[in-house]
Image 1 (cartoon, rainbow, N blue to C red):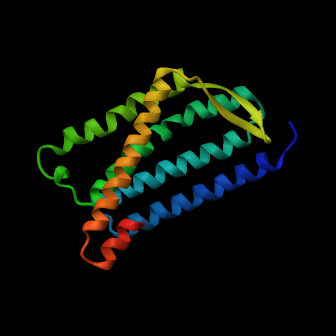
Image 2 (tube, rainbow, N blue to C red):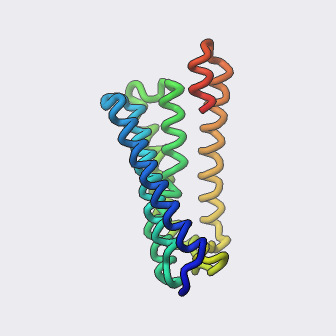
Image 3 (cartoon, rainbow, N blue to C red):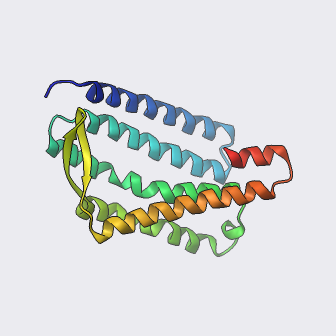
Length: 182
């Protein structure tokens, strides 16, 4: 397969993004190694880094079968993004759910759907990729598990945005408002 603009530059761009995520993870960790919020931010950046490394490979895949294998191998990252984002937002907002006996059950409820979807999405949702615009694009089966994945993604991201918006509106000082804006 001939090298195309998308094939070459998307792959290289994904590697650059992986480097940026790795740097951000290191930067956050080096700021305060004891902070639980920073631990979540490090995990968030590492998952994004792993996703970007995977993207660099699937953009450069030579055939549909290797692209599908790569999509399936890294599909778990798509499932883990939403709870990590919500977890981070809840930590930054200082929700009390992380204090006391309710912490572990809450984390189990937060991450269990991602764990289940990490197995279901590659097995049931992903279809043979389609070659368009110079690389193998992901294709999906429109099955119920796909719509469960989409709902999981949208609900957790929407909750994160809503929590950040509410916390920003309640903030008394400029620095806190700006933190929630970011």
